[in-house]
Length: 93
Image (tube, rainbow, N blue to C red):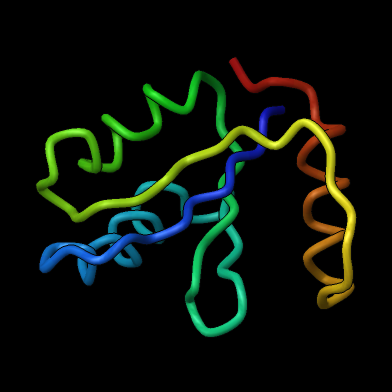
């Protein structure tokens, strides 16, 4: 299943984004430390995710959204486990 990184950008409505992600992707997201971003597992494209979250319209703030093709670094082990599980999961119907 695709995994997307969502990086919030300065905008008065961006405070809404955390709640929209949590309610839209209840079991398919993980917040990065200090809510400096989120990882979301969902079908589709970055553009479709942006529209679903209300980022394209600006209704729920501004963010840069990237589909993850590869990953590496130093972070909480829970993040690496979550990414591995989600990326290896078959796409849901």
